[in-house]
Amino acid sequence: MAYIVGADRYQTRMVTTSLDDLISKDNSVRVIDSYVESLNLENLGFIEYSGRNRGQSPYRRSDLLKLHIYGYLNKIRSSRALETEAKRNLELMWLVNCITPDHGTIAGFVQKNKAVFHNTLRNLTLILKGWGLIDVELIVIDGTKIRAQNSKHNCITQSGLDKKIEYAEAQINAYLMAIAKDEALADDLTDKLKTYQELKEQYLTQKQELKDEGLEQKSLTDPDSRRVKNNGSLDICYNVQSVVDAKNHFVVDISTTNDINDQNQLYTMAQKASELLEKESSTILADTGYYNGTEIKNCVDAGMNVFIKKLKRIMLQRIMNFAKKSLYNGETDEYTCQAGDRLRFFENTSKNGMKYRKYKCIDCNSCKYKKDCTTSSSGRTIQRWVHEDVLETVYNETLNNNEVYKQRRCIVEHPFGTIKRSLGYSFFHRRRQENVDAEVASMFIAYNFKRLLSMFSTEELVTKFEGSVM
Image 1 (cartoon, helix red, strand yellow):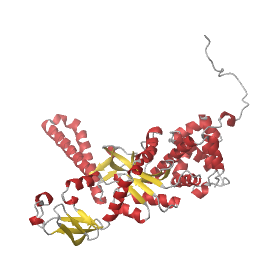
Image 2 (spheres, rainbow, N blue to C red):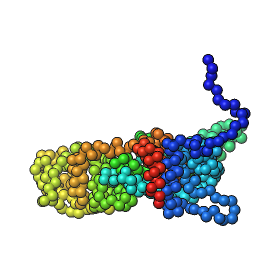
Image 3 (spheres, rainbow, N blue to C red):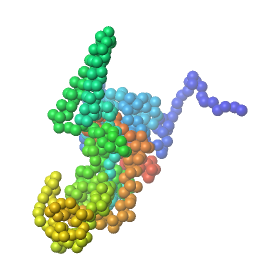
Image 4 (cartoon, one colour):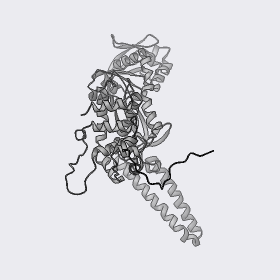
């Protein structure tokens, strides 16, 4: 049986085909090429060079952007890896016309234009809207934690430092006792003793710095990252927020924060999407992690419909708390408890900048349910936020549109799953929030491209981008 053998590597031959003939017509690099060529990079904010200055000629910014997008679409983020690929990858040779920038040039391009990648993602959103692929009728907001370039050991906290100081002191005492017991070992143990004494001083200095700066924690490698709970364990992460349009699951906009939770992000993200796409009234879906009365009211005041469920602990309180079963009458502005007694308004109060109205029952002492209701000698009081009616309306609307709300997970979890599992971006390469934001924007540009490539052929996308030259 004969084997299939290739050509002799030492055979001299004449290549009569062009590089373009080696790249198939349905190759995705043709889409990247037509997309970047359709952009006005200077208007987006990219630093452009005239090419007529003295010294070494620069690479075209468009070629470096093509290289960057290709890398993120193909799981290549490292500038050194891209440098290697540009020298051996036929697709990249075609895409960037066989230029071979070194890793310093590639990294420098990203560093100098880090603020522009977010603009590029938002510009892509506008292009997709112009094609009718985004309608902003129903959008979903969600966040995910992605590990920062900072190990757990390089994140200090007050409690963690206390434990380290205690351990260092125990070691110091142990070595001092050993030296006192046997002076012959003094020379061998002195260096170790000095090491723990220096460590103790370092921990005490860090503890004082935390106190002076008023911080509960501080990351040493990437100061902008935070220790947060991520999938049941503590990790050093950034909180990545996204707005996803329900029509075709394209990511409309993103934000990179270091907030430990999502409670203050609902209105901010909804407003960003509304301003970008010039859509005043949209329906917003969000999970219970975004439940914040002020944020919800801001969205409602802006003309948005919000579907969001309450936190489980709030629901549990209403079930377990006897007083929370009391019914509120908006016409008379009073509560009626299970015993039939009325709780009437008696004072205004405030907490954390939010205004509340307090209602008090005057017949508690004679009520047979008092032991189940309250232990206060002055009787049961109920505190109600002045805009509680807004939350009740949103809650009822959410229940009435439960079938719509059920779509939330299917719409918004898909982009994060693609980013983390398909593309493998479960951690960041860069440090500091502004650099990480550029990395996040690049990830979601790649995600939107994957969506486009699954919906249209290469020829269709090339034609569309050529028709939307900006």
